[in-house]
Length: 400
Image (cartoon, rainbow, N blue to C red):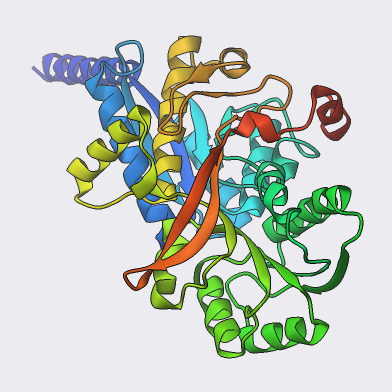
């Protein structure tokens, strides 16, 4: 009896193991990492976006018949925690690829992990140029338009301004440093007559806006480049409005037209800033209409730019996995290089030369409407039109 019982138990365990193995083989897992607790204004809409995409992918049959599963971890805004999360996702969860990240320093940390461990990584949000150029590697691809791309779009408009004396305000970490450096480079190339009269580098998330505004005002610029976002932007705008910093001065601002950063400004929104952003209420294209209807039906809310980024990250990952028909990193890389796909902003392509996608951005101006900030006169700029030549990229990016 005891032997029969043991045999029965052993068979049950074996069957359970086979079922678990079969279940695992019927799924494809993506490991997603982001700064959910640190930056909820962007990451919560981002999460909603990727959850919608997962639903759509699985409703359409999954990845070549396999269910797509996303296992998500919070990095808390710390590069070391992001690398720990990446290691757990790869070693314990056996994910097919890594995706996500928001802050540029965290994106670089996960990219370095991916390169060392030979794991495919689809960077969703980090904007530093280093991720595809100076610190680029064969295992890392990026979805969002980089600092270079957004700077080039903004410079196109900024160069038309009569202003010659410029000041900059940016958070003192990888993203802010990268954005200021590339804007200054591209702007000075188009306008050799301008002077850079002041730079302010408040710590990210901890701006002391009064002294920053006072220092910029003392330099008496004719125009200001702003790279702050989130709560820092709200404080800067409030203090700048109070002290008249923006009166009769042009302002060019990365990201400020994104609803997650524009909406909190409410009736304090300064008018006439040249910005990149996402005027979801003004986009009239079939691709965007389809996304907007699906998003509003699921969440009874309007999308933010984070929603687009999260949605398209998973849509891109699904397209890559389907084309590769494999979870082997080398096959995923081969499938992604040169891959084109639809997005809510139109067709995009992941370039072979630097693994940057050609997703673009909207450029327009801030305005006040019914007591809140909006983007007006916005135009979509295709990412492919604002990237350097292959010859230039080869100089910027190390050989694999």
